[in-house]
Amino acid sequence: MVIDSSNTFTFGEFREWFYYKAFVFSNASTGGYIVVLIHKPLNQISVARKGDDKWTWLPPDNCYSNCVYKDDLLYAVSGGEIRVFDLSGPIPAAKIIMKSKIEWWNGSSYITEAPHGGDLLHTHRSTGDINYDAEADPKASVWHTEKIEVYKIDVAEETVAEINCLNDHVLFLGHNQSLCLHANEYPPLKANHAYFTDDTKFSERYKNNCCNIGVLNEGNSDREDLVSPQHWSSWPTPIWITPNLVQL
Image 1 (cartoon, helix red, strand yellow):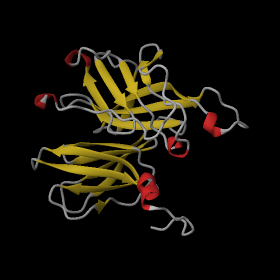
Image 2 (cartoon, one colour; image 1 turned 90 degrees about the horizontal axis):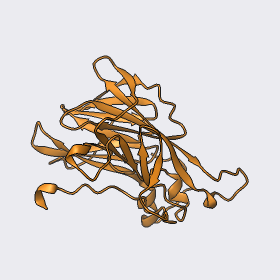
Image 3 (cartoon, rainbow, N blue to C red; image 1 turned 60 degrees about the horizontal axis):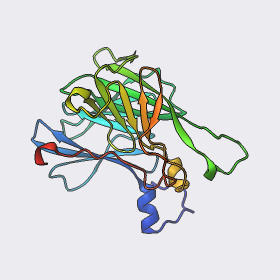
């Protein structure tokens, strides 16, 4: 698809521009795995299963920001909308399961699964510039996370309900796959907190801006830094690394 034929990229520039997010999910029904790629133009989705010799482009849509795979179904977030793709057959089938109440335009949306086959959670993260000045140089902007809202998804009823407390759960949000963990299984982590890193296309254009990394208390919205002082280099965007504890 050609958006603007006047745009010309080197291979290095194209690599930075074209790929937005990539996910690897285990496929319990086949014992294999599935790779999901959110890519340009317009943040569309393509998938590949173990053994595939090409990518499968899912039905046209755009502005996807995050996804999760469960029971042969791929749940993808596009702003405040959640779509589900049935990947069990040769031709993926898609439908909209709900339009969320989340006002999503001033932040990022995520979808994740609670531990041990738990609920699906739709999370919205609001961000803002603490030194906002319409006439200032954008390179001087310092973005921070203002609020994180969490909603439980009822897939059968196609509804969402806001959750005011994560209880003993912990969220990890950022530019890679979002996670929800039990704090009692990982003692260093703080229950009812969300850990976050940068997750914005803004950082692609202003690579030396201050990072947006920290921990937010879901009980009172207090924030604390994970890195102090914050790094003044937002490129590449920081990601969370999940080690395989079995192999340590």
